Each structure stands twice: as structure tokens, then as C-alpha cells.
Length: 463
View 1 (spheres, rainbow, N blue to C red):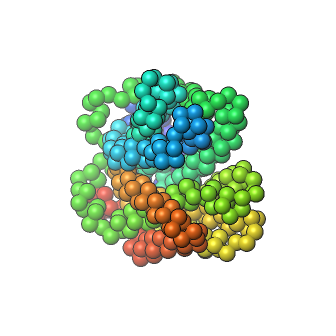
View 2 (cartoon, rainbow, N blue to C red):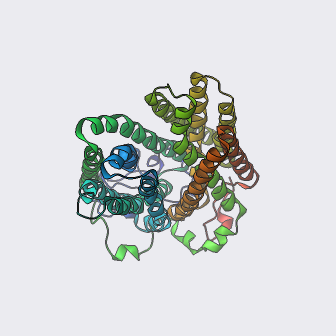
View 3 (cartoon, rainbow, N blue to C red):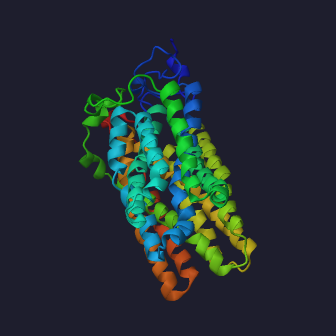
């Protein structure tokens, strides 16, 4: 199958400097193609298929991840867990989640993120499916559930670094914002599913069914990807030691990690992601408690569903706007900073307003606006890693996410301590706003969007 290079990317205009992958990816379209990891930019039909599949697996991943929190109250009653013991089970996920971020991203950069995603999905689907059985193997359920959650974190930790690697290697620059925003919707959709469908399954069929649902669907997803989208062996031992996806990016690997970490813009990106994730984890963890404490007669489904439902169109809108601006010739760095300002700057305004909300309706509006604007991160800093180092985007994003996970746990703990000591939610929301404002200030001051991972920097045009 011969395809002209001018028609193979998402965009009609592709700059070989900005999009170093000059080879056409036909895996999944041409049955003679047996080396998907030898491909470059996806052609449009294949890109649409992969976008849908990646959206679905991200949705299922978050369903499986949130299954334990949804079932925690029921399981605590059955196994006689205290609040502290329940917290140990839930927190075990994040400790495992931190371990595989960098490794997963590095392997994805070498053999292709699609293959790592397939193996990861098969693995966490298996763990999700056997979780109910582990609760009844004869060992203390507290121990087995902590172990299951830790393994879940380990196996899911490679997901987002692998997605980042895929986006950097297979998608043209002018389309990455929308794709990343679309995949971000998978997170919100998964949370809506587990909160809606999962709650119904919990009530009708017991807590075990909440784990079986995403496990079965993830297994179906993995089979479809293996059967129709990937060609050849999923992974070989030799591929782990071979060169990365052999595009024009290969020469970029001569640059050292030390070189990258000497760049202020890299640290600005990491710091902004760290600040954003800290506030996001805190809001996700404490908003239900805030509404229950402040508006005890409010319906739980309202404040648990509406903000996340509004996040999906907001995320897509941010991706569409960012890609449109880049195609219109606006500097990439200007677009990234503008999106991140909406995500961290404007959202902080509504977080502060939440302190002054006197009615439940006002609080819902402010929370929905804050969370909706925060999704612009998907077309800001989250894509900036593709701009700076596409050849090692997976590993670099893994480093970012590892730092963010540890810091997020710390800020969640500090917020809980402040609530317990002061009894004031205003001080927590003020803290989150300050964290966001410091993060966006650093990114605006030092952020860039020029490529840093090429051996010959003179070949790179600063954007």
C-alpha cells in the first residue's frame, strides 16, 4: 500500500522538523505489515480507530481503579475494617502507582506504547477479576486487599506514560492537543460509569460484580487490539534491548538526560504538572466530604456526577481550541501557556469563590467551573512534554507523574490535617489556589515549546 507522505498525518501540513517520523504507519490497515513498532505518524483512518480504543481503555482503567473506593463501605462492614484500615487499603494503590511510571514510559519509548498498553491492560484486568477471590483465600482480607491494590497501582502506573509515548510518536503536533483532551475524557467517563453503573451493580449483585464488570470489558478490549490492530508478536525479549521506534527521532537519543534536566523549561513543566496534580487529587478526594459537611441534605449523585460530566466537553473544547490556534500559526509555547493559565489560573478564581458560596446551587456552579477549566491542562503542560522531548516523552512523563503522585498524597494529607485542626474549608481552598498560582507563574516565566532532545540543536526551529 503506497500512501503519499503529505496525506498521512492528522494535519494536511506536516513539518519534518516538528514531526520527525517520516514513515507511514499502516499497521491494522495492511495485513502485510508485521512490524507496527517500525511505523511513524498514524494515517487518519487508523488514528480514528486508535483514538476510540484508547478512550475506551482509559475509561475502563478508571472504572477498575475506582471499584475499590465505591465498594469500600460495603467491604468494610463485611470484613470489619476500621476507617484507618480502609484507608490503608485505598492508599496501597498509590504506592504501587509510583513505581512503574518511569519504567513504563521508557519501555514504551523503545518498543511502542501500544504494546505496553496491551500488556498492562491484560495484567490489571486479571488482577481486577481475581480481587474478589483474594478476599476469601484464607488469609486476612486486609492483607490480601492491600496486596491487590498495590499490584493494581503497579500495573496501571504505565498507562499514562505509555499514552504520552504513543501521542508523541504517532500523532502530528497540530493534533496532539485534541487527542490528549479526548483521552482525558476517558478518565471522567470512567468515574461516571463506576459512580452510576457501578453503584447499581453494587446494590443489585454485590460488591464482587463491580470488579468483574471492568475486568471482562478490558479483556474484550485487549483481544480486539491484539487481533485487529497489532501485527506480529506483542513483545519479544530482544525488543527491550533494541533501538526505539526507528524514525528521525533516533538520533535524538544521543542527547543525555543530564542535558534535559539542565533546562529550566523542563523543570518548569514538571513543577506545573506537580502543582496541578496536587490540587486535582485533593479536590477529587475531599469534594464529596465538603458537600456532605456543608450541605448535608444535598443529593449525592448531584455533586458526584455534575462536575465530572461538565469536565468532558470542557476538555474537548480545550483540545480543539489549542490545535486550531497552532494550525492558524500561533506559537506553540503561547498556546501551551494560555491553556495552562485557564487550567490553573482561572480555575483558582472559582476555587476561591467556593469559599464564599452560600447556596448549594452556587457551590455546584463554582466546582463545575473549577474542574471544567482545570481540564485545559490536557492541552497545556500535559502536551508540552511532546514538544520538548518526543523521543523520550513516555519516560519524561513518567518522571513527572511520579513526582506528582507523591506530592499529591502529601497535599491530600495536609488538607485533611487542616480541616481537622481548623474546621475550615476556606483555608484548604485558599491553599489549593496558591499552589496553582505559583505553578502557573513558574510555567509562564520559564516554559518553552522547542525541541530539546535532538543531538544537533541547530536543526531545531524554536517555536
